[in-house]
Image (cartoon, rainbow, N blue to C red; front, side, top):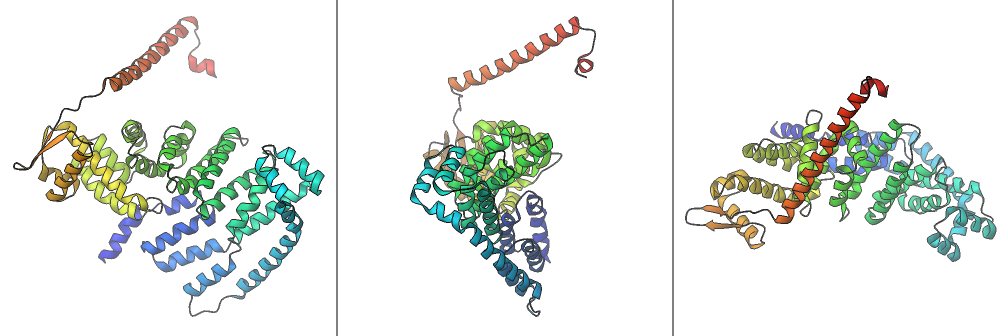
Length: 448
């Protein structure tokens, strides 16, 4: 009974259902595999979910294996065998159609031209003159790449979509789909450097395209936000890039606030575990978390609120314990667990130190959820690594803080920021007064 209630508690913070709405079905498989290992849900329900996802792909053998596991006492339905036969027939047909195209791309000179050419039209003209390449061949190659992807052959899909992307003009109906497919293939093969390049290319296309309506543009950004989590939490530069995109790119921050505030969990984790930029971005993060607290909150965002909004150290300590179980059961964040706990303790400690000059080690240990001995060793390491201006009085069991003076450069930067903001407000007020004098029509009426 206790295990069931614990699983239910952990499942309460599971975002897989929300995330799945914005992911390609192939990208959902790793999340379901992770949940199966964690045993958050009934295994039969998980297998049914996998079978449902597989029903719309060409991975028939995988679907048959899942069916056997789910229903061990039943025969595999004939529909699976029929579908398998259709897939094999279709694959052979597409292979025959693309045989000539793939031979062209295997030519060393063609490969050299493709790698060096920056102009798709120029490359197409070269292929047309030298190899009799036709426009419909690109569509054939796109269909073959898509079929390979649906079969789970992501390597072949990525290779053919690379050619498609180079040869298709940006206004072609398949161009954007090819970019999405290439990104998904690289993610599923865990090629993080290439996936980051594809992500940035897709981001540029989305930002340059209006898609006919603001709503469609918003949907595209929302999808990109979710897909980018695979890259950001696996690429070495990901913790910086996620902050730049989610917090400081207004278009993507608006998308998060409008469509998917649950993404704040990942942004918050990235900020807390980012040792180089944490102090400079925390203030902006806290502001966003406060604004969105009525639509979304979990132990990770609440930890930041407790610490930086309410200065509730007991609440922060309690939330930190809950954060541990949330991180352990989140597909994207499980690898951040140790980093997060270490840095979260440091944030509690730093905030506590700003308020107190002399701190009892035993009291500090309770705030950090550590034993007094572990807490003392931890503080000693901080002092040794020059991350803390303090001395330890072992006899009294106290930490005595040094004076933490703000550097003159930082003071100038902060004052300049404040001055610029005040100047902007003054200018806006003057403009409002001038407008009020010069016209009898209210501003909202004039805008109509």
